[in-house]
Length: 505
Image 1 (cartoon, helix red, strand yellow):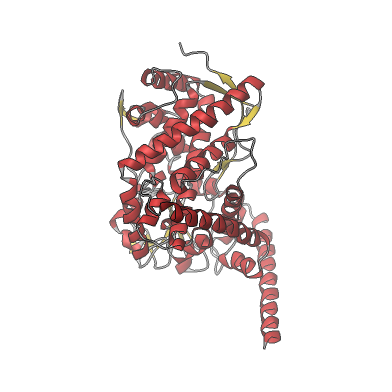
Image 2 (cartoon, rainbow, N blue to C red):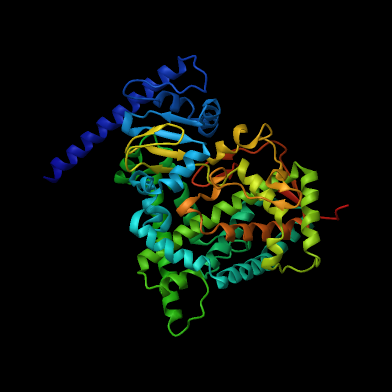
């Protein structure tokens, strides 16, 4: 029986591999023989738009953006192997409000999405629907609204910046070293989110120490999970997982380290909490709520994922944009220094951070052009019609696309490609946050990001602290490549030389 089963599996594998390569040959023969423009969205019987998709696989975000610009409704429909497998991509705020709020129940993340990240995020809040999501959301919402958590976040930031970040930049300045600020911000973000979520310090920003196994494994797991998202079809990565090869083997090994490390931290924290109610991190709060170790682990991993790469990506792109817009940088420094009178102090209060509207506008403008999360998907539970008239069939993947939205002149005007923080002020000195359905970088509706205000606190604190003290000179003068993975990043990092800021006139 075992031999027969193995033979069957092996035969199926050979057939699938043969069909896969046959399809690739077919695609290449048609696509390279075609004179169609890259903006096309041609659909063929059986295979739908697979050929156009393959032709533009190296530039998907630009292709989607081009197609959306050409669409009168800012919505496109990509046919994939029949009606039920359509993928709808929209940059229309009315459609997004319909998905994320008005008809929220009809647009869960869906099984295809939760399968994709299921091994990494498990049953954590960002990867579940229904009652399990509702329960976690209520718990997390209560904790994130607590004043004590906000005060804890500010104290963590003050310590991390004073003890590690500023000395690191000072050393680079003195020794004329080249720093990769994307790497610096990622290490800082991981240290910070680990302290806030786990009450544990991985010391990533201390370059004299080896990188924590958890940090390395987390990077590997995130990268391998992203590979699933760009696979030709879900069966490709599922087959690799079954055979335990390639990126799936790397994911399995990395997850073993992540789960083992986080489980050890949970166990130690439970022991520390016996007779001690003074723990302020999220892990302690979740344990106190009475949840089991596996669910607590998955919830914490979700928050680590959300808090690590998103803020670091936003700060990296803002820093690069400021180096190319000296007038905006000058205005930003003036605004920050007018609030922070004591140049030597590393301490910023919550009230200080609330006043930094120009810095917030710069961050929003940076994320408009270079959103940390490029797109997000839902799967229709039942047939529906979007406000712009686009029919949605049960099982369809419906995607909203922040990257493309930031490049729509119908939403942001003819200067939508320009970095212009002033667009975030309704009048001089009066900051106005745009509708979350026009600017959905933090999602919107019932699933709006719980850590939104915490993220702004962190980014303001870091950027204000470093920009008032240092100037950053890019080593490379070309425009960096924007890489859209689970969270977007700058290809090759942001290499700079650090100089002390002399003053602003």
